[in-house]
Image (cartoon, rainbow, N blue to C red; front, side, top):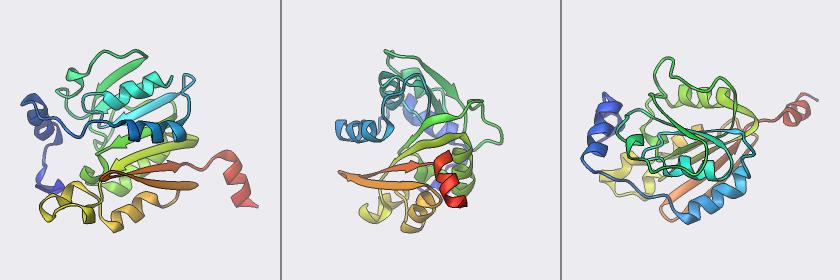
Length: 198
């Protein structure tokens, strides 16, 4: 299976979730690292792309963010456990022409085990930058294709895709957690822009 084999993401993933398929669970090592880069929510907006069963979305709410989990199939968020904080789930495809996204900018956007499956990666990254507040963080978790067996390489990203992902950010931090690579990508803030323009 490759990303090109998935013509209808909602149908493809929906059938797997409905059949009881579950994916790599969120780990304490990941959330500890994320917490360091994201910081407390203080009521700011966070968007969890490809939220699945909502584990990461609920974690963001627990940090104090107004968290929205977005997934292309309703089957995944329908399985989500109740949250202790303000969480909402939206069924939408981020690659659709006009997905229902927040009208305000987000302090934090997460994409866990999602980026490899995005077909139009440059357009996706452009959309993410447009959704982030100045100085906001884009948190990406993905395996690297070169670290996977050949038959699973398509669920990871290539070196070229990593270069695309990490370009044009104010700061980039990458940390390996087991077989996954975690990226904290910080958008340019107002102070950064002033420095660059001098």
